[in-house]
Length: 164
Image (cartoon, rainbow, N blue to C red; front, side, top):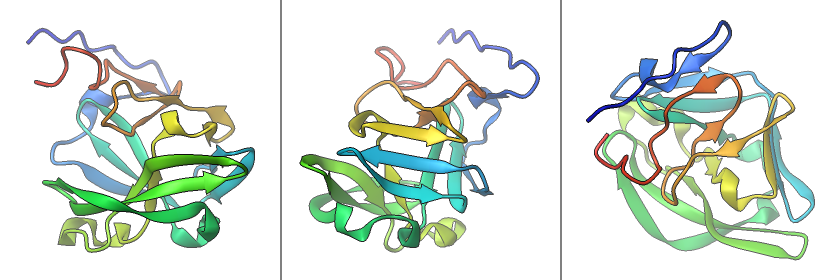
């Protein structure tokens, strides 16, 4: 495996400096999620998960999300670090996106403060923002990382990166 790590400039973070197992931290950045022409989530109280080779995933407290925009969806997935995840279909305006958000109803002890916080796949939303900067979605269909100019890669998710 030959990965060419991008050196971060001042004020940037490299995803290759993020830990494995991942770290959970509070974020006071201004996080916004727009869908169906509606701001369905907005907070300064997000949590972010940082994991080697992945852009951060932002989790938003339920109180900062329009509850009517989240519809429980069937299915679940398992994360070896955080536990079993449930999913939401996101609906607002006249749009719906199936399984476009996820949460951990009973996370592992190391991620207990993440309980019921919601993460959104940025590529399935109209737009997501971190401190006013529009996010670029992490490549691939499975991962939900949020790429901003503060983050450098390369990022897991593109073709040929599954073994990272």
